[in-house]
Length: 192
Ligand code: HEM
Image (cartoon, rainbow, N blue to C red; front, side):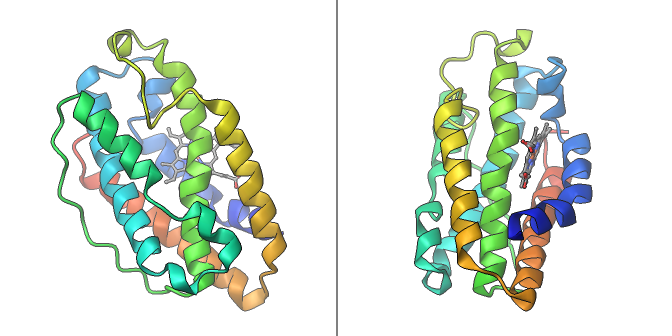
């Protein structure tokens, strides 16, 4: 139920981010290598900031969510940025109004869910002429099996927690704030 609520409530902002994001150029295979590098830079800002935020507050979280707390996404991005000789950018502050545990769970939902779109992107990277010579990618990895398993596990864990009405509202607030942060980073970023 919580996953259904989160998906429904964030659908409009997901569609907006999807439309405006340069990642759409991966989907239609028109992206340049320069734009790809800048997309990774923007993603690095967003994921490293959100991951660090959740990590700093992880003591509040139900222990079943802890396997989804860490810096794996920004570490993968750092790897890709190093390979492209991009410098690691300064990050912007993230100051959500709600940092209760359900709101943190909503933020984790956005980061975990975004990897589903990433799986699609990984498939299309190989068909982009400008990205044909890239070596292995760590963030947009083609390892779809482990990503699909992780998403399934995340959904099970969220379903097992039991969010009451107020907690559901907080989770939605956290998810919307995380999406809004991505939107800000992309809007200010250099990848457009
Ligand atoms: C061009 C960019 C993007 C594309 C093409 C895209 C595409 C997709 C696709 C195909 C799914 C899977 C839907 C399903 O299997 O039910 C998905 C799910 C999701 N994406 Fe994106 N996405 C993009 C960007 C983003 C970004 C930037 C974020 C977050 C910052 C994000 C967050 C999510 C979330 C949270 C879900 C899970 C939805 C659910 O609850 O089922 N996506 N996306």
